[in-house]
Image (cartoon, rainbow, N blue to C red; front, side):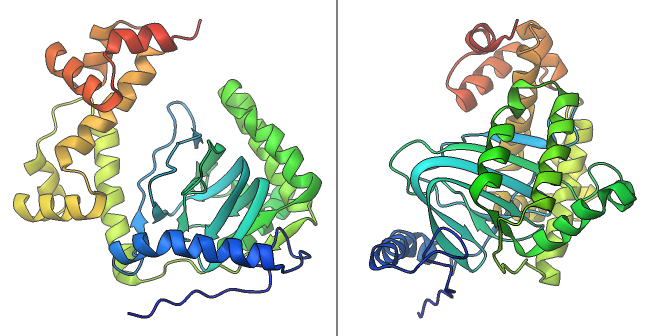
Length: 326
């Protein structure tokens, strides 16, 4: 087997004007050495489709410091993604682009561009803010408004991946770090401000990453999103795997094989994980464990408590006490 990595003149530095040095070259070689075993084990680095759902009462999703240092998560999704990270050092691996960052990094990744989690292989915690949003998350015509022309152009350029440096990275990073503590309305306003700052910035680098365009891959993507939407719409009611299989025009056995291959979860585990995530949001609203159980689609308190502990490592009461926001 021959493994090929395409590097450009910017692959060894921190920005488009950075100088290639022996130190940075050796750092990239070290990175190659760390990813080759994962590359081989994943069948020539086949990207995994990530299924994304917006936060409750929001049109986008915010993720904070996922702590995936030991997980080689080479993945893609149809949503746009803004990533801001802070760490002593790390690697940005987006499509064919690989480069090293120091202290922090900021990138805007377009739809279906495969990329690696920014904290992979890191020896320390990588403080991370990720914002994921659909292309039309504010409506089909919003970005066609004349006031949004610069942002619309930014999103078009982001289809091949963009990175930002200098004052832009610092200013946008500070705004993104405050997102999670803001109201949903303020989060949206801040996000629009971030888009405008990025659109007007000259401290920008095009990563020239190539999105996945395979018809078969995109067809599978549409199918799994169809399943996810079904779960998102019906999770509070009883869901039978036979019903979902029929919805996908597959036999139950074929659907179960397909779903496990696509998501690495059994359908039951995936559904339970989704319901547990919903129950956590309910518990953080100071609702009771019983309310969280039934409002998230579980039908039995005992099973809910057992499942909650399996996925989170603690029982619902302890989670509620720890995370309730007054």
